[in-house]
Image (cartoon, rainbow, N blue to C red; front, top):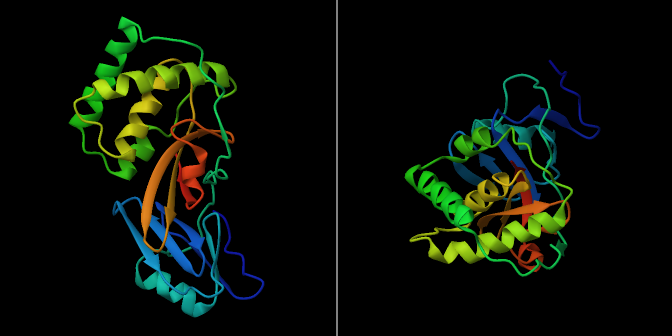
Length: 218
């Protein structure tokens, strides 16, 4: 087990299992996968988050402990850090139309997705170990274009969470993959998710994401 290392200018704690955090200005936003909820701690001073480590004053760490957001001992930091915000788009897709197989694949994925009410913890476990090509932007652009033509056929598409899951599963079905990124903002608080491959956003225009700070990647 990893040892707790003291912060240079304060104390060190470890975020609890399933708790992810990011600084947004002076505030700390936390995502508790087990509770399936976000929490905002305003005015967090010099508290810093480095992976799973929380570095700051004793008062800062006590605030986290009071919300049961800290691990009782040191913990292994084996999380994949969220990627930087994407800044580019996929290359233009070639003229393409959905095939009957595409329609069936999309229909099966949609039915399976809307029948469940998964928590973020469920989703993180379900999609933790995926395999697929990430170095073929042209193929990815083609599948995303087919998905965009099929999405209006769905009776219900929900918000970003369902749409991102549908798109992820659709590209996975073609042996392609991308990162599923969750981000947050404050004033007002909003949480959003999107798919990106490297610095290319595949689910929407990257300009729409500049107000968010990534907090989790699946």
